[in-house]
Length: 316
Image 1 (cartoon, rainbow, N blue to C red):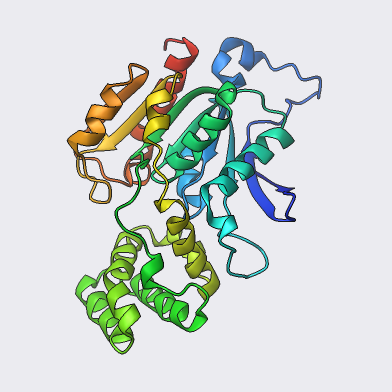
Image 2 (image 1 turned 30 degrees about the horizontal axis):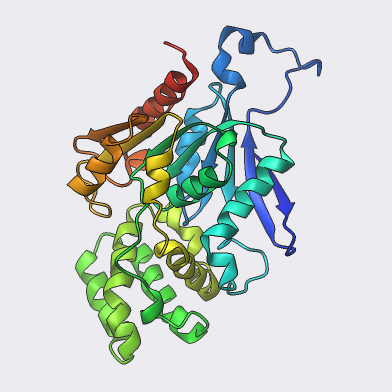
């Protein structure tokens, strides 16, 4: 992947990655493969989930030779080691970042992939610029206003508290085979602080979910500032409800949801909404989890490719 960045008006640097955009040898822009398979001309924009674009590496790897891909690294992964401002953690800021990258790359229209809360970014951007969309593919789409927030439980600018959370997350990485040890250790670390004691279950949930994929989550536990930013970013979109945007989607929208998803469990309210929009292909996949892209990357990427091909009017 090629690493690039774009500077926003507030001097914020947004990092993004590209794959499959290089001209073939000879430099004349002619690529006979693209004549054989029209999908190679298509662009899939990955609205990365909040942990890191590394979560989507199986998708990048699985799409080699299939279509061009752009993936955006969002605000938690900044270069100056600071805690982000409130404005940088709100949904409009993510939509601004997405737009800036597409403008920089002169992309008029594309397919969009999203996972979990990343769906809010895609849906908010769709509301702004529906003309930019060919289709959407989402895994475990999170679009509703959350009935939880971290904000009431954590002072984001208190680095000492964030250091304690960082210690719990690192303990998770070091003891991923000893779940009970992690539970006890996290309780020891937080019991003397009422605020962190209340916050402990949320810390433990994040840590327990992350340990199986420590190589993916490691980039967000390098500093207390990044830990604070991770939770602050999740909070920044928790209050947004994109239900109306889901109703208004007028491009092919494929949603893959695992029957064993414990983070966003299946519910009839979501199913009823998705089925009310004839453009949505809502699929419940038996035995799959919230992390199906990591659990079974080959099969999951194949379904994503199938959805994009269908949106393009192509048949295998």
